[in-house]
Length: 590
Image (cartoon, rainbow, N blue to C red; front, side):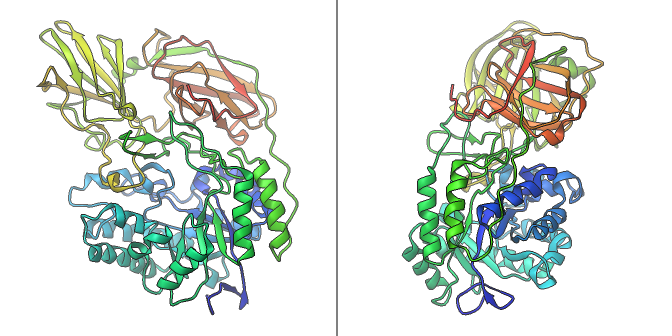
C-alpha cells in the first residue's frame, strides 16, 4: 500500500475479489471453482481459515487430508493466476460451527472465548503459529499469492454487542491478536473488517480498515479516512450478492440487478471489493453454525451454503454470474477468460434401501457414561452429533417434562415409544409424559450447530445443560448417556434388520453408478437426519425446509459400487427407497 492505493510490483492495482472457502468445497473441485471466479472477472480469491477444521481435538492437527490441505489450495489459486486474501481469524463467523473455534476450548474453565484472557490468547497463539507454518511461504513477499491478511474479524460488532467489557480491554485483546500474527511470521499488509459505523471498536492503529456491506462510497471514504490518516485504499471486504439461510425460514434471494448495480458503483469509483460469497459451497458434516434473535434462541443454518451466490453450490454459472461478468469485463484492465464448462450432473434411478436398523440397538456396543444428573456434550468429551440420555424410574411418574437446558433438539421416548419432540429453535422445552413403574425415559439429543455470531458465542455448550424437571421436581440419579458422535459412518452389518414407525432408524443401501456425476439426494418425505455416502458425511436434512435436497459431489462417487447410510431421527414413515434429482430444492418451506 502506498499513496492510498494497493500496489503490486510497484503498479497501482485494484482488488476485485470473490470469497470461496476451501473447507466447503471438495478438493477435487477447487480448480474448477477458482477458474469460475476468474472467468467472472475477479482477480483475487478470499478465504477464511477455520481453526476447528484443522484442530479437531487437542493435540490433533490436519493440514493434509482432502480439503484440509490449505497449502495446496493456495498453490492452486496461484497457478490459476489469482491473488489470495487470507482471513485466519482466530474468529471467522461465516455461518460455520462456533465461528471456527474448537468446541473443546470450552472444557477449560479458566478460558474466556474472544477476550483479553491469557488461556485464550495462548490457544490463539498456538493456532496462529501452526497456521503460519503452512502458509507463510505463500505470502507475496516470498513470491506467493497472499496479498493481505486479516486481523480478527468484525470485532467492532462484538465490541458493540459486549458493552459489559470495557473498550480498553477489547482493544488490548484485538492488539494481542495482531501481535500474535506478526510473531507467528505473518507480514501483512494487514486489514480489519467491520461495518463502517463500527470502526471505533474494530480498527487498529496502522492497519487498513475495510467496511463490510457498505454500499455508500461517501460513507466508506469518510470512515476509512477517519481511521487511516485521511487516505485509502478504500475497500469493502464483504460485498453481499446473497445472504445466509436458516432452517424453518424462507431462502433469501438478492436480484442480479441489485447486485450488478452495486458492483458498478464500486467499479466506477475505484473501490476495491470482496464479494461475500462468490461461491458458497456446502456445510458438509456437522460444520453448519447458528444464529439467534429475539424470537428464536437458536437459528441453525441449513446444510447448503449456496448463499444465492453468483456461482451456485454445485459450481454453476447463475444469471447473477452472467450479469456480473458482463459488468466486470467492461471495467477491469486485465483479460477475462472464457467460462469453464459446468461439471456433469445427473439424477440416478431410485435407490432401493436394503436394510434398516434401530438406532437403539447400537446401545449394546456403547459403554454409557453414568452420572447423577445429565452431562453436557463437552463434559462427555464429545463435540458434535447426538447423545442418548436414558433414565429408569423405580416409581410411576407422570406430568410435565421440562428441559429448559436443551441444546438443541430432542426426540423423547418412554419405554422405546416416541412421545414427542423438544426443539430449542421453536422454544419447545416441555411436554407431558407418563412413565410407568420400572419405565425408562430417553431423550435423543442433537447438537444443531454452535452459535457463530453475537454476544451469546460465549454460551455454546450442547446437550442437556441444566436439570431435567418433571412436575417441578429435578430428576436425578443414575442417568446413562450413550455417545453417538457419528464422526464416521457406522457399520450396520452386525445388527439385525428392524424398522418401526417412530423409532430412530439407520437405513442403508448399495447402489451402482456407471458414470459418476454430481447429484442431489431428494429428501422430501423424510423427517430429520443426516446422510453418509461412501463415508462422506453430506450434512443434515430436515423436512421444515427451505432446503429439501442434499448436494452429493460426483467426485465422491465410485464408478461401480457405492454405499449410502441415512440416520432418520423421526421415522414417521417407513422408507423403501431414496430418490435423487439433477437440481437442488432450496426454497421449499414446509
